Image (cartoon, rainbow, N blue to C red):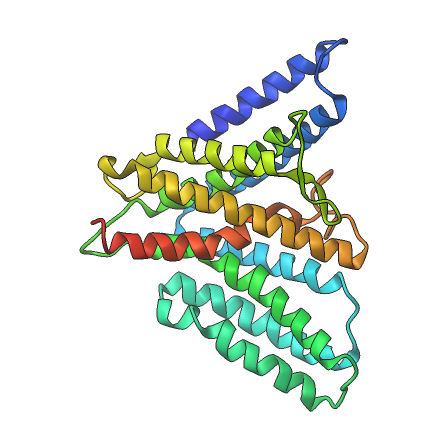
Length: 309
């Protein structure tokens, strides 16, 4: 935690030094984007550090609140019909908190299926009971997608705190911090590599700032940093390549999350999901990479722990 905060302090100092230069060679727009990112990281890591220091219960509650707010942003992005409101009540006030209660209790066999099985069956049935059949599939799919991405996927981040067992104790707090740091580093590294002159945009109609250079350079750079920070993972030193592999997966899934959420925003004709974070939209705009990377990272780590004790 101290290392991350020191790096953020160094980044803040560097930004102030660059802003004092009247003839800086860096594009002012890029500098402003980086300034806003650093500001958002200060908020994110300061809050996460405080929650981790207070214990796993507080950390799980924090992610539960983030999931609730992100789901709110997702649902309000598209209009709903009166027939959806009763269903949304159960989604927000039953399935969302229940998911994080189960995660906090370490009930893997329950929280791994509660939403994709029981909630997904409940949602269409409850909407159908209101008798409103207009755009039924569209409305059902929207609520299910929001619950899946914002709640179910995000809940696997605090679930990392439950991976340790009596037979195999691990530094689960360090593992969660490692995951969040790698997600944020992959975002900034992909953005930095995307600024090189030779740019090949991957999907121009959805995200003109995401390039092949950014994806490949960011993924490789994230992997190298992950190998350096192998000690924060539960794997022995001889398996530093596992930390590099998991970091590459984080980078790829984070990219997939950002691209997917950009496609949703393009479809709805908006730039951001919300306005909570100045210069960076809403909560979902900041955690979209975490949402996509968390379940994959959790399951891969859980599986690898059985083969690399």
